[in-house]
Length: 64
Image (cartoon, rainbow, N blue to C red; front, side, top):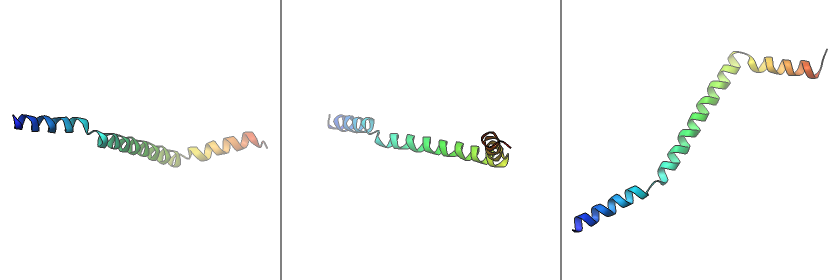
């Protein structure tokens, strides 16, 4: 009977301890966002998209 009680306590404590899971989920979301931002910046820099966008905006703001 004592072993059942100890097993029950262990199972209960394992089921309730989810604090580390939330931290891991946040870390994975941050890593995913960082990877996506890195890919976007790499693409924009390599294709000169940012400089083209900047030139277009400046041409419309300051004609001539």
